Length: 62
Image 1 (tube, one colour):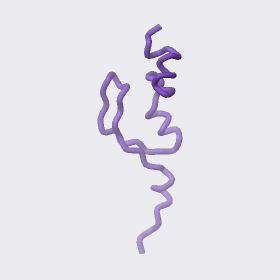
Image 2 (cartoon, rainbow, N blue to C red):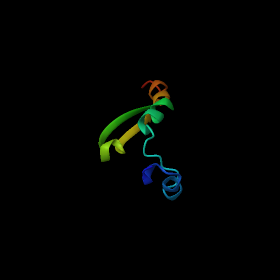
Image 3 (cartoon, one colour):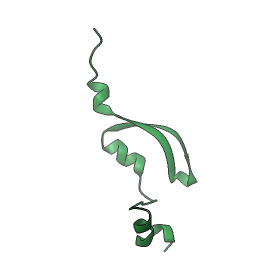
Image 4 (tube, rainbow, N blue to C red):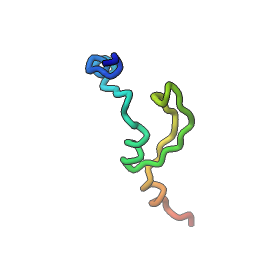
């Protein structure tokens, strides 16, 4: 077992799971994700998340 996959890693890193699909989880929670970049073999992701409902519920301009 690699150290980054172990329970010790999660305890030291505040529950961080390097194999988690973070972007997929954000999208599943109802957000649109605009990816700005990634690195570390996909473990590091930079982006912006916007609620999908806010886009649909935006008031019409008068």
